[in-house]
Length: 318
Image (cartoon, rainbow, N blue to C red):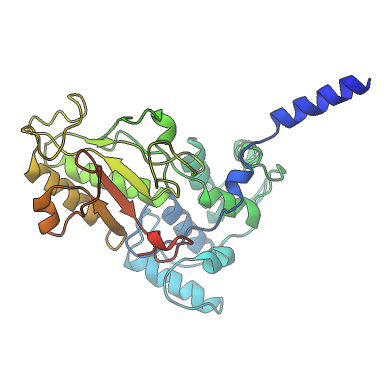
C-alpha cells in the first residue's frame, strides 16, 4: 500500500501544473497612449464597465487617455491617463458565472488572445467562459474555481499573446526554437501586426517574424534577451520581395533592399508611437538616419525592442 501511495504521489507531482513558477513575477502590464492590442481592448471594456465613454477598438488613443483620466479621478488615483498596476487593480472587478457586462467582454478578449480561443465577445459569462477560466487557472497553477478575481486578472493580463500571421507576417525560425518562440506581450504582438498590415500596402512582401519569446518568458536559446516579451526579431527585405521563402540575407547582400527595409522600420515605429525603445540593425545608412542602432551580430536581422511607460526592467522603460 505504501508503495502504491508513493507512486500515486509521484504521479500527482508529475501531472501538477509546471507554469506556476513562470507566473511568480506576474504583474499588470502598464499600457498608455500609443499602445494597441488585447490588453488595451480589455482596458477599454473595463472602462465601459465603470461608465466611462470610450470606443472598444484596441488602440490607446486620445479618447482612451481621457476616459482613463476620468476613471482615475473618480477613484482618487493620479490622473495621468496611464493604466499601470494601481489603475488596473481598480478597474478589474470579480466576475463569475451568470454575469453579463462589459467586464466579461474584457475577460473574453483576454482569454481569446492569451489562450488562442474564439469565444464570442458578448459579455455573457456562460459555461464556455467558465470552462476557459478554469482551464487558464489550471494552466497558470492558481486556484481553479472559475471565479475571476484579482489574481486571475493579473496572471491573465500578464500572460503573453500569439501573433496573427494573416497580418502580412510569415513565421521564420532561424534559431531552431520553432513556433514555441513566437509569443510576446499583447502590445508587442499587436504593434508588429499593425506594422505588417501597413507594410502590406507597399507591395513588397511579408515581414519575416523570427524569435520573440516563449509563452511564459524566460531564457530562450540563442538570445541574451527576448525574456520579457518585448523583443521581436524580423528579417530585412529583399529586392525580389521573397524574404519569406528565399532565405535570410544581410545588409551587405546584393539582394538587400535598403529602401524597402527603411519603409519597414518606419512602419514599425509608426505602429507604436512612443513605444519602440530601439531597433538593432547594422545597416550604416539606416543608422546614420537614426532609424536603427548598431549591435554585434545584427547584420542579418532587425531586433525590435518595444517598451512601456513603466516596466520592472529599466531596459524596457520608454
